[in-house]
Image 1 (cartoon, helix red, strand yellow):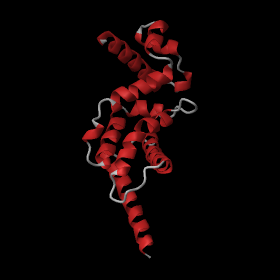
Image 2 (cartoon, helix red, strand yellow; image 1 turned 45 degrees about the horizontal axis):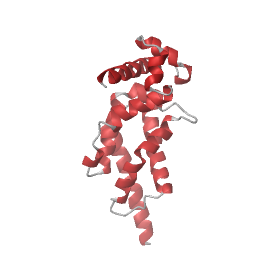
Image 3 (tube, one colour; image 1 turned 45 degrees about the vertical axis):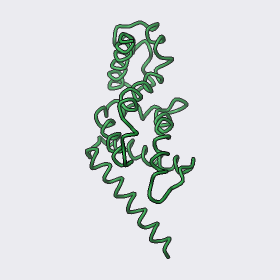
Length: 181
């Protein structure tokens, strides 16, 4: 098992390096294997394709390292998630450019959906965590993250999340005030 993780991490490292040099759609499995001195058979033993490797990186670096149940507030989770994106911003900047059937944004949305649903159901206003709400808030958040990445992450994660929170709270206050009228 340890050798398996060493191999996977070597392939991941090679892919991350290649993603600094050229667009993802121009990277082949052979390029990844050449980048870490492995053969294609080793790659395909661990991953079905390069998209699977990108998903494994996200799962390993973020999903499996964060204790989602340990968060009391969704904002704290959001801050830590943005911190993870910030730490490996070059990779995530390139990963979010992957579009189409195996688009990275769709994978992230799908992976984080149960967590978002949990926090939405626990909010003070009891927003129903239906498909529309999950899609709306998930798209809004990831679009903001993708813009933040694309624009060079000028704000530190805490300042970025504070801006999202401030905008969200401000909008919620307007909506609540309108409901009173």
